Length: 72
Image (cartoon, rainbow, N blue to C red; front, side, top):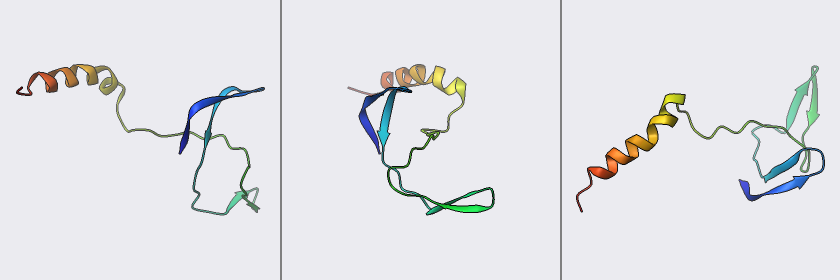
């Protein structure tokens, strides 16, 4: 889960607090297993959706067309 509000970090600026669940309890670094523990810092990429760039531009138009076809 991701926090609703950003938190000010001295070095990074605004960041979001998150809570994640990992599949593994260790990470392989240079052939060595490193144990992961709560509170460790992480830099992650969050995938929110799988859409093409053109879909982002066309989505407002698609919503407009869908709304116009609804009988009221």
